[in-house]
Length: 268
Image 1 (cartoon, rainbow, N blue to C red):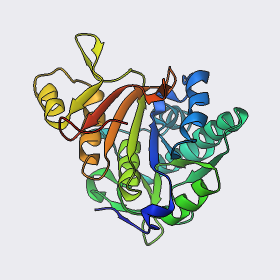
Image 2: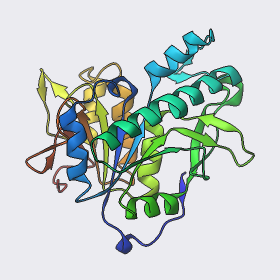
Image 3: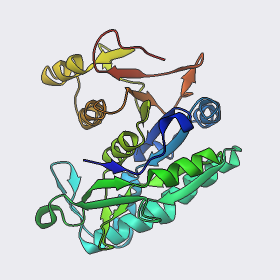
C-alpha cells in the first residue's frame, strides 16, 4: 500500500495526475499541449510519462536483449541502465522542453531523485529490478505545484537501500494519484476512450468495465490500462482514458471515457 507524507487537503487545489503513454510522446498534438495550461487553472497538475518505444530503441542501440513476463519487462542491471538513459536522459528532458516551449512551466523529475518515489522489488528472482511504489514524497510534489510548476515525472524509483527500480508507468501514475488523493487520474493513449461498436462511451462504471473485459469488448493493451484505472478508483474519484491527439478539455469538460465506481457518481 502506498504511503504519503501530505499536507492537509484544505491547503491545496484539487489535483489531476496525467499519465502520458510512451507511444504518444512523439505524437501528442499541439492542441493537447496547449490545453494543459487551461487545466492548470483549475487543478494542481503533474505528468507521469512512459517510454516503452524509446527504451526498446535504447536497448537495440546498446545491443542489450530483454523479454517480458506477464506484461512486465524483465529488468537486469543492463536493462535498468538502458531504462534510466532512455526515460531520465532522453524522454523526460525532451518532453519537459516541449512543454516549456509552449510557455508551460514544466519541471522534469526522476522518481529516483529527491526520495520522490520509494519502492521495493516485486519479484526479484523473476523480474529483476522491477518494482512497486511503497512511498511517494507528496510534500515535494505539492510544493512544486504550489509554485506554479508542472512536475514531469520519470517512473524510476529507489529502494531504501538506494537500488534503482523500473516502475510500470501506469502503476506509477496510479500510485502517485492515490498518494496525492487526486480527484482525477487521466490516462493519455492513442485512442479517444473506451469504445463499443466503434463509438466512445462517455461514462463506464467499475462493474461495466469488468463485464466488457470478460466479454472481450475491451482487449489488448487497453486491458491493463482499464485494470489500473479500476484499482485506482479505491482512492481516486474519477479515472479518465483520453487521446493525446486532441485537446484534453472540450467545452471545459475532460474529454474521453470517465470510469467511476458506480452509476450516479458526479462527473465534473
